[in-house]
Image (cartoon, rainbow, N blue to C red; front, top):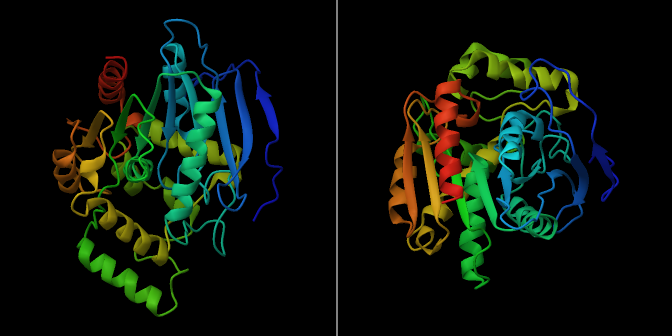
Length: 334
């Protein structure tokens, strides 16, 4: 595990002159912190742009990114929300970004179960609410959306009440799309591999070559915007430690187990937080049918299909991204 000084802070205030200002720089005035993981002190990198707390302020957004992501990847969205008066808080999940990595290779998307992520999220939400003014909102992408739903359901079981005034999910990982391999077969392969002691190895069609994450094939899966897709690689060039490859067999198995737990009868129905759920027309990573099925079971959720979009809705071309942000903003402040 990398050596970090948990609790260390530094300010980011330098002026930015990059012509791609909002995509290849972070907004000024941010505060970076290394926070200890909930149960074991695992180093978690977090960042926040303080809200004003003044009367009539918009409130604060906690953004949860997806598997393999890092804080900088969604810089453009932070600029957008800051311009509209929101406080913004973000973080790197354990195992990715500049938080402590997991497993035997820093390029592996590995895990030992989803419970540590859920415990980290509990602690990070407490940090968010302690450092940002209400009302509090959550916006969560892909795996982040999955973990947010599990967290909200667990809070109900513990009878701890609501936290977020509203939440928005962007292509949430409610079910996994197997592509050319049926999800049920992919799960069986992952389970067999783990039983054979191959859990730490890359799952089928996954690999550790970080360069493959810049390929045109991956771009089509994530976004139709070639320029925005290139921003991820640009950030990795500036900070090579951000690079991460594919997932392991045990990550995949734990993902199937966690999505099954969320979709079990009577679980998703307990989430009372008003929710806006976006799906992408050209989705190839998560299962849109599962998303629609679970959304229909939630007491206060709205399904919002996005035409012409791939998985990363906030990194799509201007027309698509602008429509998503406009709908999201209007929902949060309704």
